[in-house]
Length: 317
Image: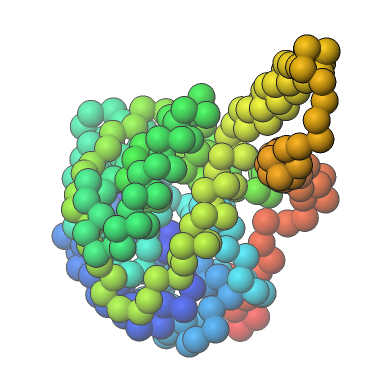
């Protein structure tokens, strides 16, 4: 009887040091789960170190290893999408090469899908040990805000690390949008999901590629991708200031009729102008962000461009 296939998709950006350690660990897990066939798909997201050379060595040593290498850095979202498209497995998991996603959970994830009928088993961190406190605070605030604004539930601490059935993977691949926020897309497609909790694990090698600023931009992308409520909020702010302005006009008219009109208050007037101008620019920025996303989608550019892959290399030989 033919074994089912599990595809392990790994996004890599400057992971030269971590890859040998990751391969050793995931290979050990594949031997323990010998009732399944495995394939390992490494997506090189325009790395500037020797990541692709390390991947090619693994491919020569182990034919279960496949790779896709981009022409430049397209970002983790594009890398995950490329890996999902390249996968053939009956089950597909997304993992990071830094071993912050413990491969030891894979067997439990698989059993939950097979025995309890889940379509997806995701993972979430219950602690953020090792992270700067300010970063942890803003991460928690982001999940609170986006769950208030969006109709799609985002789980606090959720990782991209999850095991999915082929049906769910095909549903995600069918979403061809250029501006991708995978945590939202996983929730959008639905399917029955189980969450496994674990404590935060620090990287085994290398440095994180996510600065505070990159995470902030990623959070903005997530909000814009799954909610239009910021546009409603900006409209309500505008309406509120129109009402306040009307009340102030009435107040000034009454005050002038009753007490005259001495010339004073210009410092407070300047402060009000600055405040209102700032709010206007803020609201225009919200509208501009949505307009920019629409502009990028209408260009219909590819999500990623492949420079080389294991399949192309084998055809060339």
